[in-house]
Amino acid sequence: MNTNSKQKRIAFGYNRNGRNEIALHEGQAATVKLIFQYYIEGCSISLIKQRLEGMGIPSPLNGKNWSKQTLANILSNPHYTGDATYPIIISEEQFLLAQKLKHEHTSKLPKTKTAQNLARKGSSSDSFTTAEGGSLLQSEQ
Image (cartoon, rainbow, N blue to C red; front, top):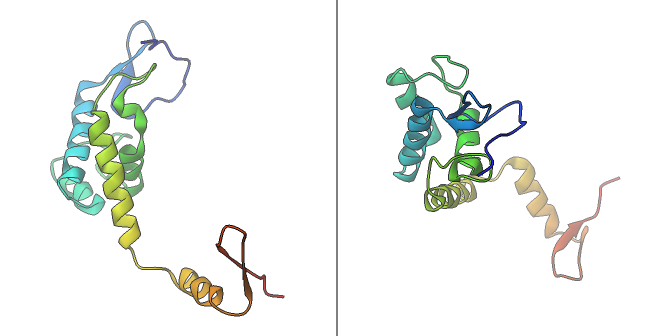
């Protein structure tokens, strides 16, 4: 594993050792594991945020508050499964399960008004079908 990286910014859960290699930051790595564990157990990002703040676990910027976007970014970062630069924090199985759960969650979210309007327009005579069978909307003028 070539952990001597020239990256300036490294992912939460890691730091640089004396040889400028990316290494585990034990406390942060434990937090990353906890975030994935909570998410896989069915906790929402909002609930994970509340739990971390309630336990007094510092955010990546050493603050008291965690942002939902930070948690979403952590849950989406494949570096945590290990690669040529980053040591393993979570298994690939855990990462893939979290991605599957995120996809299932986002597919259940209600459509926005814009998406609903596009869907409605897509069934009107102002649309046409692509060779693949998909629908394209004619732009309004």
